[in-house]
Length: 215
Ligand code: DX5
Ligand code: ZN
Image 1 (cartoon, rainbow, N blue to C red):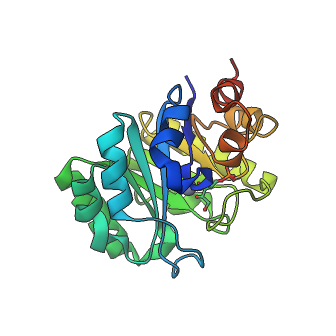
Image 2 (cartoon, rainbow, N blue to C red; image 1 turned 90 degrees about the vertical axis):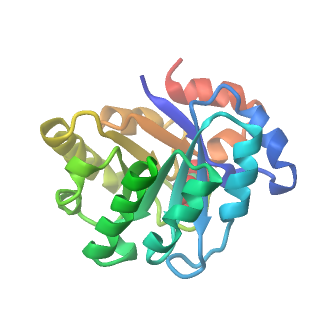
């Protein structure tokens, strides 16, 4: 079953509790953390995750778009994140391994993320140790961008690696997922779909979630 993770980046931050309630039928909540360095934008951080944790039991899928993320694993674990994903481009390999080890110690699910420029093979040193691989289908930093269809072969290649090396690993897609592109990423092997504008930009977010799921 495909999971839908609405991205609260497209929500109204002044009414975040209500915005979370509007997507009650979703499977996960996707939280985009940006530091103004790894990506040019600055979004939200640890205190917002902590506040979200108080108002929802939903699985909090926290996407860290920050340099050297190992520095913040404990803080986001303390705040109540269920899964943390770190960009492979955000540190040298020892730093990425250290971040994953910190997640393991804290009992948080472990994810790695690939920018569009990063090749499928980059997951191979980590694939046996992670719970989720996230493939970006836009340049990270902003919601509402156009889906990059050239990432579909990469998704399919990573799906094949997952079947071979770690079948329990989830394959998530983030960026430009809407009712047209959702069936394409599902066909390529994705099983968790992040959607910001397609959910929060819809008149009825719950109906949008069901459409993305293919219901
Ligand atoms: C972009 C973020 C996404 C963003 C997706 O850097 O990682 O999660 O919210 O927004 P949409 O679904 O509008 O492309
Ligand atoms: Zn994201």
